[in-house]
Length: 77
Image (cartoon, rainbow, N blue to C red; front, top):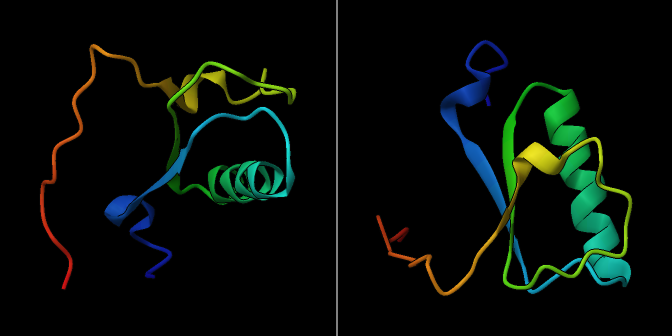
């Protein structure tokens, strides 16, 4: 990626929850690293279950509920 165009991509981390476990911790670490380097990143959760301290990144976590619909925008070949 071109460091001059950091917002050319937006990273999404789709997880059932942040209840705990290795995958969740890795996703949080990766998410924070992307934000620190200036990239756009969002964590999408199916359930509002969070076992980690996320006070520093609450504005980049989205809890999906029955009111949200996921739509395929573009299929990647």
